[in-house]
Image (cartoon, rainbow, N blue to C red; front, side, top):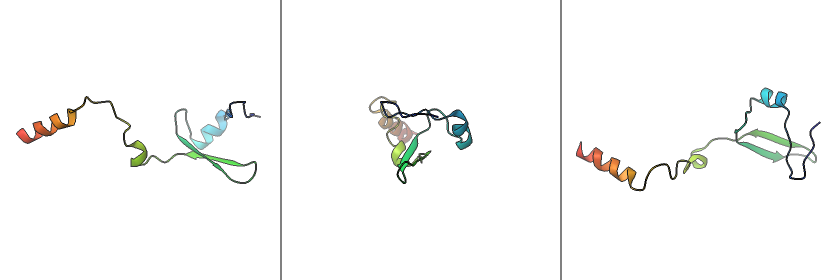
Length: 73
């Protein structure tokens, strides 16, 4: 039976993750229900949560360059 560590971490058994179809790297939401009970569920990917995920991927002004190229076509 898993225990809560001193860092408030819990190892979830592989069988439970497989049944829930959760994998390493998935974002989850943890909700407190009644005393002594938690719910862990997959986090919903929304536009707001994904916005900015690619910040720093392209050089500054890259989109302006693409817009200028489109205008020339």
